[in-house]
Length: 169
Image 1 (cartoon, one colour):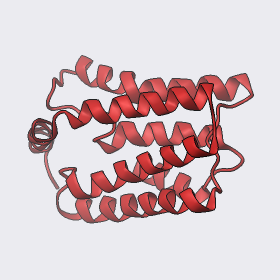
Image 2: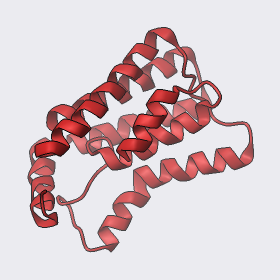
Image 3: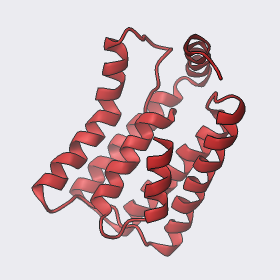
């Protein structure tokens, strides 16, 4: 088991080595999310699934998990990536902005949490860049975002993806 200081040092080295990927993944996600709300389409749904597949493959290949965590989370994340990729062709999941206000506000809160609240809480708890988990290049905030999108997709949601995301959260 890795202690917190070693993990944070690994995150710091990781963030420094992949810069500016943190900015790229966040900007792409913001654009895709905005378009989902203003101009939902089949093509946009496919682009979001490509983006999510890419990020989960990224975690498997690049994120500094070690030991048993690398194996366990690597397997879960690669399955999630494959399921999102398969859904590009099967279209079982349909991302959309929820019609009911409660679900809509909850979805927006989760998206805001993934993009901004998660790093803000890290900062307020004394963690500074580069030793923080950032959206698009770290699993935690990206899983929150993925769950938010799946909440909007109900009832056309991939139940296995949802379960795997909850498990890895």
